[in-house]
Length: 198
Image (cartoon, rainbow, N blue to C red; front, top):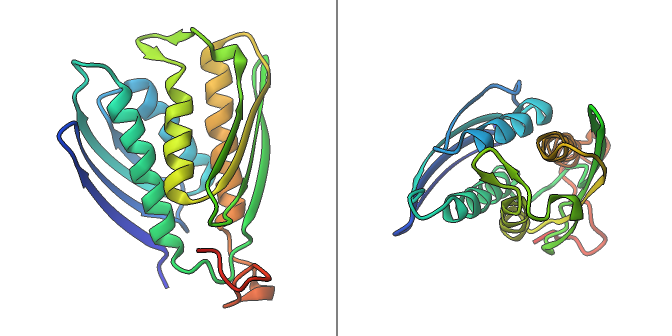
């Protein structure tokens, strides 16, 4: 049974279409109008082994904020839709990823309770080309809220903002790959003593 989703989200500020296959090969086609974000979403797909197609247009003449946030919303909705009732999933995932001088970690629980902890003071005031590194928080908050996940992300150390953010997105992909994976030992079972991860 395919664990896939197709999301279309249109507002006065953005138009977004996402196709996602959780059990993929990391193939991706991403066009958001924000080249650095395209690069980061490609990291999530490749290292999460998700097949991901993203098309987005937004009011980039204002700034990137609306597009970045709405992409987090749409991707969270897509992963949530593809997971269905979450029966048989591992639920938890964790990864630590280096990128040259930088090290970042991501730990996720697909609990049904959205909560983000982001420890990344190194990104304050940083820009990566035209990209405001502060928007990483906006993306992760929107993703967390719509995936209804508990996500803890930490940049442990680093100097280059590009490297630090790339390590975050690679770790996110790997952690999501683990958490969304299926465990044959609990096939068909909701991984919670409550019997629900809604």
